Image (tube, rainbow, N blue to C red; front, side, top):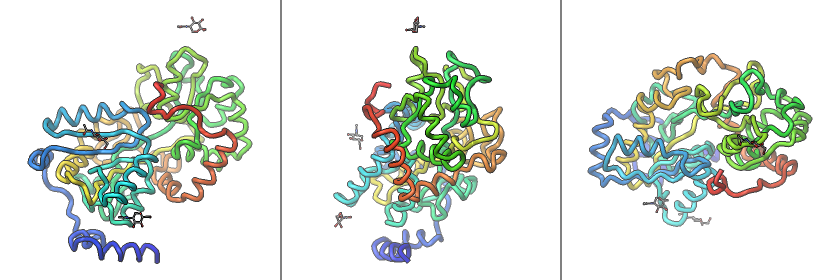
Length: 364
Ligand SMILES: *[C@@H]1O[C@H](CO)[C@@H](O)[C@H](O)[C@H]1NC(C)=O
Ligand SMILES: *[C@@H]1O[C@H](CO)[C@@H](O)[C@H](O)[C@H]1NC(C)=O
Ligand SMILES: *[C@@H]1O[C@H](CO)[C@@H](O)[C@H](O)[C@H]1NC(C)=O
């Protein structure tokens, strides 16, 4: 009923073309090549404004550099901030000016995309390769699409422990030998981390959380911060609230999956969307098509969101982890804001409010 009302008000306020697209018809998959889209983006003026979710200012430097190298003349202005703050800025822009103030956003706050679609804020658009992307991580009408899988899993500092010794199952972290050696992001500061702890509560109960807290955890803000802490000469050796990809360990960190219990591991696909009010729609389309291109997907490592791009060599296909890794589960959690709020406050009560500077400013 509520959705119907929103959709109706939506249909009244937007153009006929978009209205048709919102009802699930008539959005053709992009057929232009990246080079054709590039020419259109240059002709449009060459500007592109993106807001990307993340917790370190330099986190997307590699992506920006790769885009600028491939598309000289497109002035990509990409701002990294916590997804939970980007969305508020965009909402205020929409309220104050009627425009999002940004062409494309990719965020962890998956519930925003569902709401923005209902509010008719998103352009219905299907980039090239659309049919290769699993239905569970894209919008049927083309309002938003998963661009990359993110995973938080067991990570350890190779200088401090070994593959064999490092904890893999959640209960391994409760072993007294890890006391004082764990660093973890506050679950009450990041909803993805909260989902990890929520799943642990479901699987092991609150007693396990109390035992974990009693392990003298170093609690930090940001999911890249555990890596920065473990790089230092200190006792902190292990974490499960970060993702380092499946590297060979030469970076000083090694990521591994559990054998049985995946309760503390999460995976989701970061969502991207183009706003209806995008002031640089051609550049926005170029950017989204490039993110989803087979070349870019293959270069990103791990599992691709495209079925026609194989996972990183040495890694089993994602479908082999059915029942253990469940990408759509995070969206269901994020959509249940009452549940999220309740758990966030449970952890705030146990741990206190998240202490420290924003992870973007903490020099860690
Ligand atoms: C890039 O975008 C940010 C946020 O929208 C804005 O504050 C900044 O001035 C822009 N930078 C340039 C060089 O346009
Ligand atoms: C902005 O927010 C105010 C207060 O909620 C609301 O009355 C107004 O309609 C909003 N304007 C737009 C353009 O969304
Ligand atoms: C690490 O810290 C310890 C204790 O402060 C010190 O003895 C040791 O020399 C340091 N190691 C390195 C490699 O800096």
